[in-house]
Image (cartoon, rainbow, N blue to C red; front, side):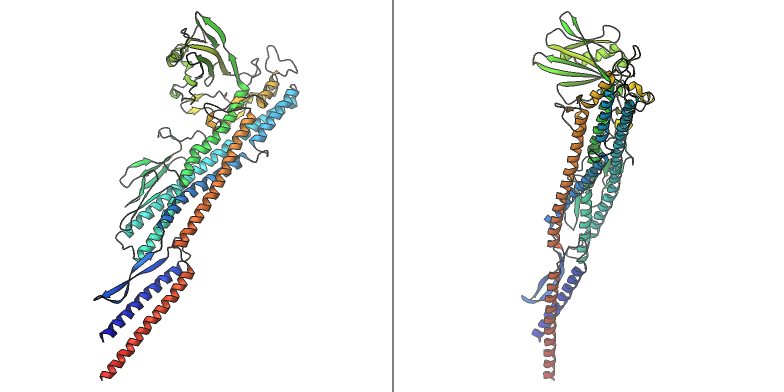
Length: 621
């Protein structure tokens, strides 16, 4: 009798475990298309009584997960978020620049302007040629305006995306913290725990799309989330991200780690304890990191490139460089310079040789009328010193500032009279002043020189002035226009003097305009991303335009290729993870058949035992 009872108990336990296993298979099949669902299996253990097997029982649910692949998938998902957003915005930037050679592009506008300048050079007295150049100049200025507006529209879109992504990240972080709370203390084999873990992994993956994260698994089913830089996002509680910034940006809205100078907004991480940290430039991957890089670096550089084009076009027309007059004072020699027409933003250029090292040095002295903008940042080239001096404060203070700053260079400055600046060596033979010149912006249309302010900053001269708010060049592509005085009097494109009057048919000014637009060579700032401080890019306006358009096209192509490659990596990892953790219907059907057979076998055992019990009972009676 005891043996039959043991057999009955064993069969009963088999039926119960088989029913539980069938329920697990049913759950797997029902969730075969549920994103993030991980295949479950019943954890079965043998029961022993008196050293003899007495059946089987279930001890919860196992999940067929692969933590290594999951971690890799989350990392690459961050990379995918970064690559997708970068490619998306750079593709849109290409649309702003337009198709090379197409209508409504900078390339076509500059080409048309050069063609019109050549036409005026051929027929300087022709009213139609003057009007054609005026129209081409207006179109070029308008195309620069439109390009600048397009770049800033992209920056504004990215700014708004940062705000949206921060909100989404907060939602995911809070969900992860909530799941941590629900899972705390639950047995990992509890079927309810398995479902919560699946949902938490989904929230973690969503967060990884937005930010670079590192997941640390602890005890009691808990996880902690950190950025790769070490900032904790989720622990027992979720931290909170906040973003403050204007919804619309202009070229002068720039990021700074100094909150007083930051005009685009920053991302702040606040811990549950209340400590706040600026993590704007601390994220290395994910969609938010891409947005920050695009907003503060990539698109700012694109703006700088078109601003440099606008600034060079203006300065090419209006700036007059005048060499100094050689002077000798005892054993000292150098040059004297006339600063009477100097304007803020104009410069003095000095070349001198350190005789001890036989190294030639460049010195650029910029007129800076705003003391709050001083000192100017270094040029980055050790052989090119840039100094800002406030000449509006008077020649005396300016001379004192120059001599203090350049005492170690063995050159001296003085003010013999009026607005004359004299630069000479100090007489020790340690330095030789090789050359000196001034570069000054022409304000008059009839100065007697071919230079003219063809382009202006609205109604103001463009001089490249520097103030505490930044350089006049920043955003200049958005405000450049043709000088209203020239619009009112197109003949000034040919007439450069009224006393004496410019002779009819004189090509001096028209030849100058043509030369500056087509063949003159200029040096471009390394802030454009082209060239370097030690070896800056030099070339014509067309050369420069083609260089930065080519750079932007290459960047967009590379971003698209990176996006495609990243998508392949993520898809491959996702397939690998799904294969390891997803529901395989063939396997589940095979399990179902095996369980049905097991159920039938145990039921048969119970039926046989019941029959034997009946027979025994009948025999006893």
